[in-house]
Length: 493
Figure 1 (cartoon, rainbow, N blue to C red):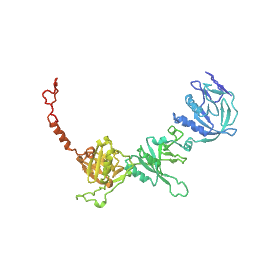
Figure 2 (cartoon, one colour; figure 1 turned 90 degrees about the vertical axis):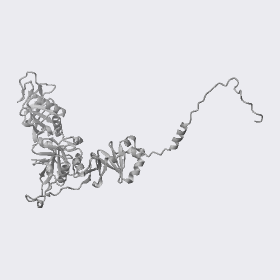
Figure 3 (cartoon, helix red, strand yellow; figure 1 turned 45 degrees about the vertical axis):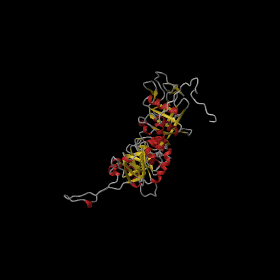
Figure 4 (cartoon, one colour; figure 1 turned 60 degrees about the vertical axis):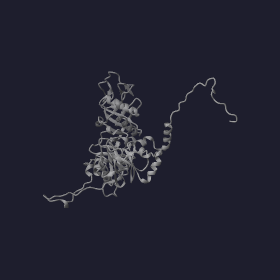
């Protein structure tokens, strides 16, 4: 049985139980009794959502308890430094269905609640050799410690839960690539000008049939572009991880049940990678020295046979390479020109009757022996004919869906092609370039309309009629005898 502690009460029966500055009964330790591991995980998830375990770790311990009846429960033991800390833990324990106790060595009484603001004291102690004796207003029970539970091992055992929101989370990524995919992935990132670091990590052999350790490439990318994230997350042999705290990361698309940033249990010098779908985590005790991705760019050396002696003139060998156009998966942007071959020009005539006024007004056209070249500042997609071109530089167009190789800046490409400000250059399939003078482009509405000839006869007839004198009509009275002076008609006339 328990007794409520009254205000200013100083005498207590429970060994090691005292009163703090607020008059609350408090021992040196606190214990939270939970019925299962699932409730323990729920408690940790609720507590770490807003608070860190860093202050609790020095005195934190987990035990698997066994009662005289054979039931097994879990106890979370902490250092009860203040009633404020115990109040926060008691609220979290009450949320997950746990019981909170306080004491010092073996005997622990129920921590304070709304019914007893200053706590409880045991009216009579149990005579037992058990490791723990817990006193609650509902029960009094002794327990033996079956085995300790390591918190770090528990966190590694928990399987991350699917959470697609982590795929859109910005920030750093750890990318693990199998040995055969590592070099290709490195060259792709270097070619795409992605900053990052890389190293190679060895894991022990997974079975006796393997004669060499498992090697994988580990890349640390500060913030991969959004267009690359599906490649890093969905390609077989490549796994992406989101950092979840110092020394730990969780696979993209998953989230750990406990907030790992609030659990500083992992070595910052190493790395633990928690994988989803029930896979075993990858643990790296010490992360090797990482080098920049730019160090793996292609390197070309001069031949020693071409080294000139001192004092002799030497002309270096040219390193120019042919220009190529390769298919690209990048989205199309600034599609403002098209090339219609001569065979499709009649189609343009038929399509002209369906084009809206705005499209015709902002489009210019140049007719050449290679076909018709169209330009529109508002986009050329309204005229679905020919090959579309993307404007990469003023008056420089590249075939849509392709990129220039080697990957040079548009200014460098325009300078290499010798493009002038008075010419418009189109770079088509097979890296074939066509240049047209700027003045060759005329408004499309002027080139489309074929007006019928007018007949000058109509104009001349109207002019002759206008040249005749104007008739002046007057009305006068006829009088009483209007036929005066008029001879009578002859007979038979």
